[in-house]
Each structure stands twice: as C-alpha cells, then as structure tokens.
Length: 229
Image 1 (cartoon, rainbow, N blue to C red):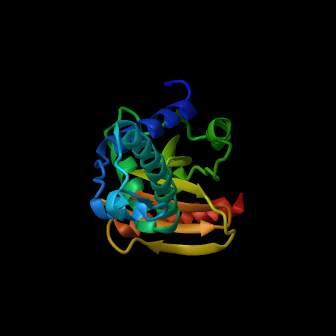
Image 2: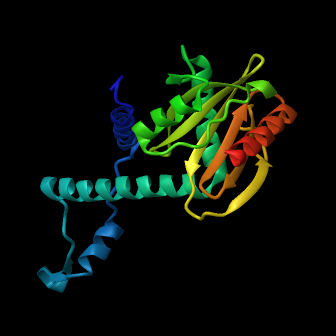
C-alpha cells in the first residue's frame, strides 16, 4: 500500500466503514413494530386472535443483515452527498487533512517545484490534476503534491510554502462546469484560513495557518497563473 495510493485509499475507506459499522447500535424490535409486520399477512390463532410473528435466532440475523446493508449503503451515499453539497463538511475534512500534513514527516508525496513532474505524477495515480504553477517569484514556492481522500474520494492536493507557512490547495472535480469567484469560509476551518472558488473544471480549496490577506494574495496569483497556462 505504501507504493499504491489507490490501494491505500481503498483500505482507508474499508477501515472507516468497518469502524462505522461497529459503532452502529443494535436496533430493538418493539411489539408495535412486530404488530405492523404481522398486519401485512395476519394469521388467526386461538380465539380468533391475530398471531404476532416472533423473530427467532435465524430471523433476527437475517433482519439484522438487511438493516446493516441498508444502513451502510445509505450512510455511504449520504456521506458523499453531504460532502458534495455541504461546504462545511468538506471544509472540515480538508482542515483535518491539512493538520495531518503539518504533523507528517513530509507534507507531499511527490516533492518537486516542476509542474511537469507534479502533474504527471497525480495523473498517473488518480487520473486528474489541476494546474500546478510555481509561484516562487511571488513568494509562494511549490513544494509538490499528494493525494488526499475526502469523502471516500481521492483528490489531488498541491502544497505551497510562504515563509514558514504551508498552504494546501485541494482541487475537487466539478460537475456543474460553472465558475465562481473566491469566497472565504464563514467561520475558520479548524483554526485555519480557508478560501474556495471554482473555475469550471475544479472546485478549489486553499487552506493555511497564514493570515487571510496572505492567503487571498496566494489565491489571486494562483488563479492568474493557472489562467495564463
């Protein structure tokens, strides 16, 4: 897995699903619920009273398996829908990944200031990569890139350095194709400054512990360089 990021991402997804399943509470089967089930096919017992079916050992396991499968599928779909539709959820995930990178031995998987090295590396692993201009002349040096897993989806991330601060730029593929100007998160994401915008191909999320003005300067320069090709 150390040499195959896609495999590592799949392992992380499975491990997260297993942990979520272990936390699921065992549902109680109430008398009222059993009565509703029985009403679908009522059988009359002694004295004409309806017989309420009881769940034996096998029946309980079958029902539990059905509930579990439904819960896992629904929770996975809901998590991805929330990630796609709720910027706050995505911002929280990005803040967590940025914090982890600050604690790691290296914040990048491929170390290079050359976009002709970083972009092919990302393309080879997840099939997509954003523009990766080196902005060293503007005070923002490209350190390299890495693959992040946000909402169970691998996405490319670029890492820049400004003085003693690191800036992580996550680029999530965009479906709508519409562009939007940079906007700041309504509240700090885990204590970090965060700006997001779209260019029609990607939704960008720039996060750092630097001040907001510096991050806005970085975003402005990145967008200009990316547009210039």
